[in-house]
Length: 92
Image 1 (cartoon, rainbow, N blue to C red):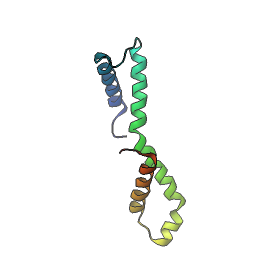
Image 2: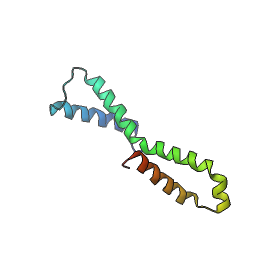
Image 3: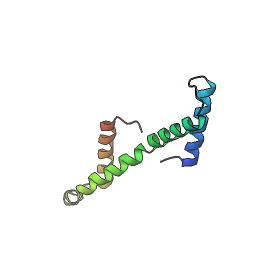
Image 4: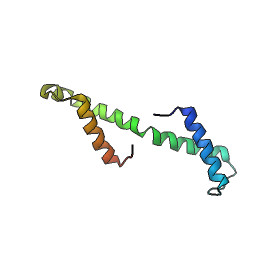
């Protein structure tokens, strides 16, 4: 993830404050809303990490074939990652 968890927590607190101040949401439980916003932000920001992990697993399964054919790991990583990004309709 690009940001530290502390910074994401700060972003969640600030976003919640702005939503309440702008009267986009009403709540008596600000801490609960902040916690949910924090979880949503962490989940969204860690998407690229999860995709990278999945790419590594896929490439590990094909490592022998890649070695035999002389395929470039970095090039294959980029290709598989772009396919997974397209599959999950992610914006990175």
